[in-house]
Image 1 (cartoon, one colour):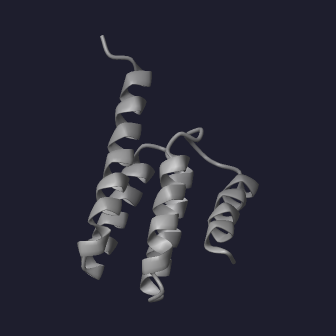
Image 2 (cartoon, one colour):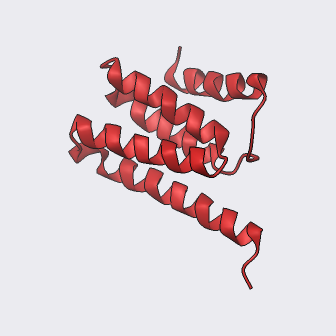
Image 3 (cartoon, one colour):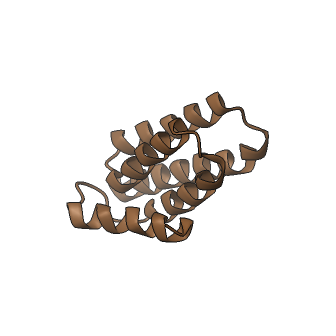
Length: 109
């Protein structure tokens, strides 16, 4: 019998798989494919309580919309992959800010 922990592990693996697939395809992706891939990840994360992954995906969508996306995409994807293993559910504002700051540090801002 499958447990709730098994279900969340499956979702973690699914999100990580989508992140990895997007990262691998990135050099050959059109902007619309990147946007769709990030949106798919964001929706999956939102639907299953992976708040920080959802937040990072939203921020990545904003970065892509702003035009300076190529350098930032892999950094955001790496942070999102790390965040998949973070505790699920609502995340305090300070924790979200810390994750976003880690991305800024990785980007050298």
